Image 1 (spheres, helix red, strand yellow):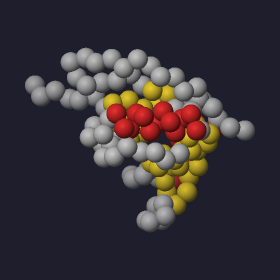
Image 2 (cartoon, one colour):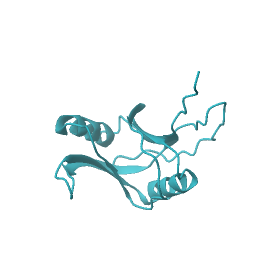
Image 3 (tube, one colour):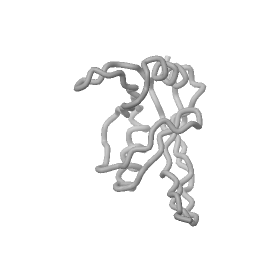
Image 4 (cartoon, helix red, strand yellow):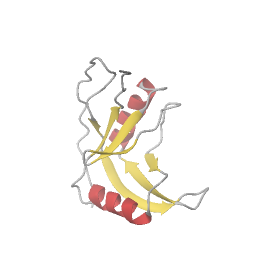
Length: 126
């Protein structure tokens, strides 16, 4: 059974810091697998065609910016988008144990944790 998260495009708001409201992605499933290059465990999130289109548009609009990938409202990773990403896969790497990644995959697959994106909050110097 596929875990579906309604692809809701929320209105992006700008405040004093560059910050956008979370954008939900339509996800087919999530799995833990070894990275093809390093052999380390990674979380592979497969997007639906709709989710892929939303993800591609989001990354195209935010090249050069840090973005947060959230699962169930918790930031999992905050990479800088260097180029638009047109893949149906989101690969989460680095610093996670296999059990942590399996817990994230289970949360996504059971439909209890939405996968969302947002522009990372920019910390202002005091």
